[in-house]
Every structure is written in C-alpha cells, then in structure tokens.
Amino acid sequence: MRLRNSGGVAQNDLMTEPDHNSSVSLRPIDGENVLAIIKLEVTEEQKDFVAPNSVSIAQAAHTTDRWERAIYAGETPVGYVLLSENRAKPRYYLWRYMIDHNHQRRGYGRAAMELVIDYVRTLPAATEMFLSYVPGDVGPRAFYADLGFADTGVEHDGELEMRLVL
Image 1 (cartoon, helix red, strand yellow):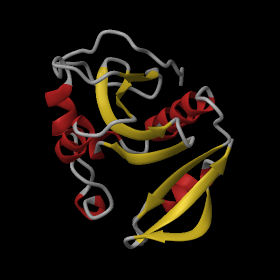
Image 2 (cartoon, rainbow, N blue to C red):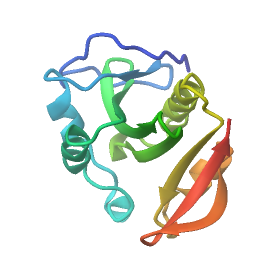
Image 3 (cartoon, one colour):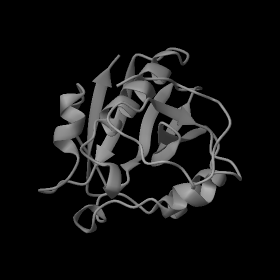
Image 4 (cartoon, helix red, strand yellow):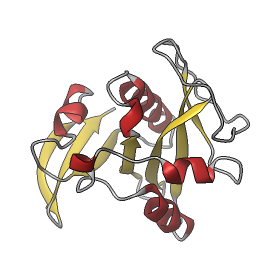
C-alpha cells in the first residue's frame, strides 16, 4: 500500500471503490467532500466509541487549535481524523478517529494513523502524542497499542488516556 499525505483537491463522493493497493492520504475537509465525510459510519457495535462525524465536524468548527482531515483510499473518502493542536503548551491530542465500516480491516486505518503520527512529529516541540478511548470489548485500544501508544493510567470522563512517545 502506498502512503501519501496530500493537501490536494478534495473529491465528491461518486468515486470508484478502493482496493488494497490504493494509496492512503489525508486531505482537507471542504465543501466538495464534507457531505461524503458526514455519511461515513462505524459499525453498530462501535458507535459507543466515537461520535458521528457530523458532531465532530461541528465541534471542530467552533474550536481553535484544531486540525482535521478526511482520510482517503485512492479517490474514495474512507475516514475522518480530528487532532487538537495546542502549540502553546505544546500538547497534541487525537480527538477523533474513525474508518467507515465498509472500509475497515483493509489497512487504511493503520496507514492513515501513521500519516497522522508523521504529521505530529513535524509540529513545534512535539515529543509525545495523546489520545483517549472508551474501554470495551470492540474498542480501539489494541489498534492504538499496536501503533506504540501506551496507557498512562489517566482517566477523562470514563475514557482512558494513551500516550505515544515520538
């Protein structure tokens, strides 16, 4: 699978289906792709672990120090990422992350998260990256642990925090 971090032109949701060889990219959310991103959903069992993209996009619109991107496989939107970038502290926090249920287990999530981590490494004084997750049998903890994140022992409103040393 090829990886590419693109700030390129976003596409509408009338795309061809990606395959396992599709390159994964992170693209800005704009008027051309926002509806396609809003339509993406996780499985029914995962809905307690991440807010709908419509909620995340609305919250991001009213938040400073945020970075959000659509995750693409080839020319097809397959996911969403929202990062809190407090460069003044500096503290970099994965706020939301999802891959659509139709595109899970194809390697897109891991490839996109590697691009997000690479991006955070370019930020001022970035030495660590944080996230939190809702614990549960089908939750994302194992996915994040496989990427090198470790539990910190800190809890935020029922979510457990993890940290990646960069």
